[in-house]
Length: 159
Image (cartoon, rainbow, N blue to C red; front, side):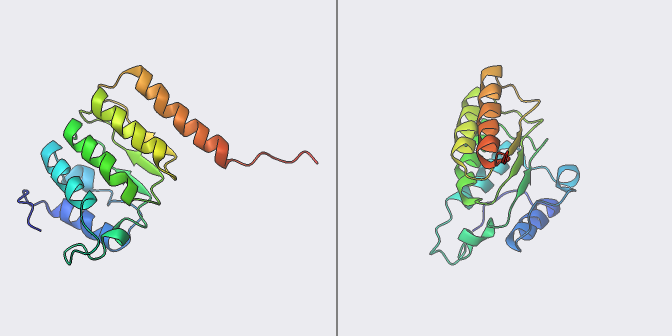
């Protein structure tokens, strides 16, 4: 599909890495590529809504199977992109760490992201610093992640 987004060599390479089963985006995406709010929104929505039977997206169910770390720090994400990212998270079943720090995500979108993280089976770390998010949402996110670690961490036997 042609999303009519400005071309970015770094962003195209990042998608190629994910498509080949990479566990994380290339480290230089933050310094050489910039998604911006609307670009990220269009990308996330296209990836999240890609039907499995579509020839363009034949392997969409497998694209994110190996993605474990998603670093979108400083990419200019706003509420629209964050809401679209929340829709994409269920397609990333192995995701363990997500960094959306240093963006422009505020309460409404952060609340939806927190809900998506709470429902996600494998996310253990979320960095959301330097966004205009109220402290109660930060506490809710920390609490959800702490509960998950408590559930997954086996208690030692005293026998």
